[in-house]
Image 1 (spheres, rainbow over the protein chains, first blue to last red):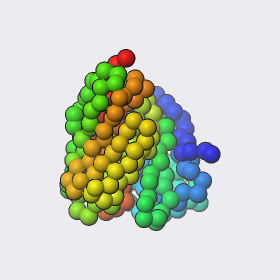
Image 2 (cartoon, chains in turn cyan, yellow):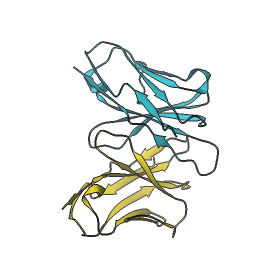
Image 3 (tube, rainbow over the protein chains, first blue to last red):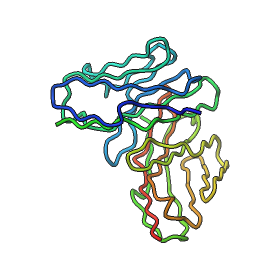
Image 4 (tube, chains in turn orange, brown):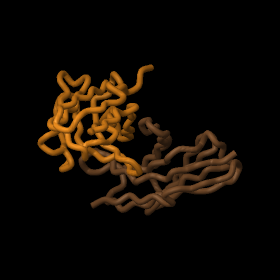
Length: 115
Length: 109
C-alpha cells in the first residue's frame, strides 16, 4: 500500500527563486488538497482538485502560487519569486469523494526554507 | 467564519497520567470532526472521525468523544510514544479542512 508521497522532502532556496513541489496521491483518490503549515499552527488550506479540475483556491494563494493536476493524477505546486514569508511546510492530502465519510490522508510534507 | 479552537496549547504528563485534550468548534451543519496526530517534521496521521453528538471512538489508549460544541480526546495511561501534536479539524462548505492550532503533548517516562 502506498500512501501519499511528496517530493522533495526539503528545499532550501534563495529569495526570488522559483520552486516546484510534487505530490502523488493515493492511487484511487480523486481529490487532492494542498495545505501550508507554519510552526505552532495547524495546516491552512491552499487549494484543491477534483480529478484534474481545480475547484477551490484560498485567498492565501497569491498570484505567485500556481497548482496543476494534469490528467487527474499527481499534482505540482509552484511558487514563483519566493519570499522569506513562504518558508513553511507544504502538505498534500488526498481523499476519495463523494463518499459521505470523506477522510483526507496526508503526505509527509515538503519543508521549504527561503533565505 | 468557522472556528476551531484547541486547548491546552501544550500539555506535559508523566507516563501513566491520564488526561484530556479539548477541541471546540463553531460551524454550521457539522459534517464530521476529525482528529489527527502529527509527529515533528511529518504530515498529520489520521486517527478518528466523529459525526454525531454522543459518538465515541477508541484506538489503543485514545478515546475521542463528541458533543454539539466540542470534542475531547482522552488519553488513558499515556506512554512516551504518545508524545506528538494532536490536531482536530472540521470540513468546511468548500470541502477543505479547517484545523485547530493543535495541542502539543509530551509524556515523560
